[in-house]
Length: 495
Image 1 (cartoon, one colour):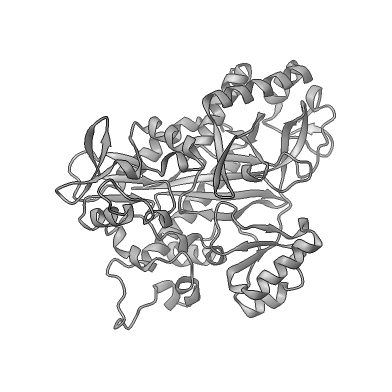
Image 2 (cartoon, one colour):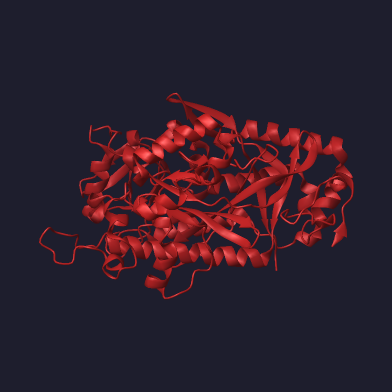
């Protein structure tokens, strides 16, 4: 280890900081970063931060948030100091993300049996319920359960093609905070973060010590291969892929365009979808209608019925007919919300053991299901200490941080939970790590989370494009960009 100097000279290291230890010594992996920052000095670092901000505005690297029903876009801030993830940590995170994706795909295959379930069936529950591993209400009462989704995947198709795993590094190592297997976002932002960082600090990326640094761009080929593997069996020859989006109304429209361009596939909006004579769908591209076999679905399944195609058919109806005709595959398949329900999260370790016969690679955080009377009683008077989440929320929607609530906010939360405890879970907060972050021209420690993506095709593989989100306020736990957070380039170090 090396004593800190330059930009890190006044940096308050700690046991929970990933760059500087309590004795003020740089941890392995951050030496090249420290050397470049020392050469830049405070003025140079401020200039680099300004350059990044201007470059991202010019490229349109923005994230949208709906406020009072209107989409408001803002540049996604990027800190010029990268986050460094050691190779051993990445190996662990990759295995964990792949394992949870495999287990959740097995759970969905169990829940949505290809033959469906009839009222006359004597064994209507999934095997995991009949075995006593998961309570039946976890499936039957889940807001994400879609009985009509039984026929929206071809037999054997993984219902999750792309998954996102949110993890934090706590005092005892990495822990899983949440799964996102509906429409996980962030791959494109991870790629753009590397592009911006390389442009702003070419001298850092030229350091020989960083030869072999994982390139997020490599995720594109893995993602494309996973989508190709999702093609329906009746597809002859190379499948045509498309990225299905609601277009400029999407909060992550920038990412949709970036990923479609990177994979060389068309952007598909409801207004460009047409039925084909064979029962499939085609997308209109430059005046021609091109049949598509796999659609990478990038907007919420609840909106499929709200959008109409040029023929007046709801998008969900057209796509469902094409899937049942064997002409189309959707990735991810609608109905995956039952697998990332916050109540389901509690049972993922048991699912891993049941379906895979393995021990969980990554631990979760203590979670109470408030639908359970005993769990509710155990934490009823502790909501001010806990994180409260709606069971059907994703992307940070509706999350309440008890320790940050005012007295009035806490009273409102307690009333909401008391009125409908089945809608919520409560979790212990995690004292997660800080990373060096440029704030007002100086380097300061800020909390950071990590999203790891995996793609399930013929095999399940983690993508070398994790996304770091970082809080920009001192002491803040809020890393989401919609709540004032920023992002970082994430370096996966070579072995």
